[in-house]
Image (tube, rainbow, N blue to C red):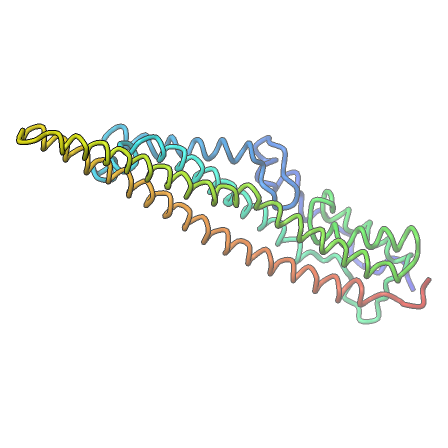
Length: 284
């Protein structure tokens, strides 16, 4: 069999260096779909400033402005963590779409009689290196390249399926670990809301004590009641803001995780069909 199963000359179809959203703006690109934490922090900080700027300029409705600027310090770190996590998910989505494009690359020959042997494995690796700038930056291509490298260098076809399985498990672990910081924020944001609740209730209880001591002084009584209602507003609205932010993030995380799970399943199908399924078992 011809060691080069391709009839057309390869051309660069994907460039991770030029297409990765983090590399394009001068930051180090995270591995596969992992976002750069410092870049996402800067984006989250900028979004927080943009969010609070019209509030402090009085351009928002008073009730909305009060919810975020007059309910103690907790809403500020809550919104910073929310926008930081949102920036990570946005960057992760952009990186994920780049990984998805690798599924459509013409990496493997489509001839029905094609057999994967140590000699054809070399031609496949050379083609991958020609159609992308670095196969190791793409989940699917990295998995295939590791298997082909073992087949080409050692020549044992029995090891290819084991390598594909091990690398599939490593890829799943890599994807799961990329959500670690976001999951931490999903825990921290409601905690900040509960801290605001305790702070507001403490303020309301202290003001209620002043209300009891006001006696018949109506002016003092009204002032104390305003402090009580203000404390209750802080207690409930900080929790409301935190829970809404956590709910939005959780929905986005669940949706993106499901997409990445489908992507990993597609990678497994391609590897089983076009790599493990094309092995010539008697070619040791």
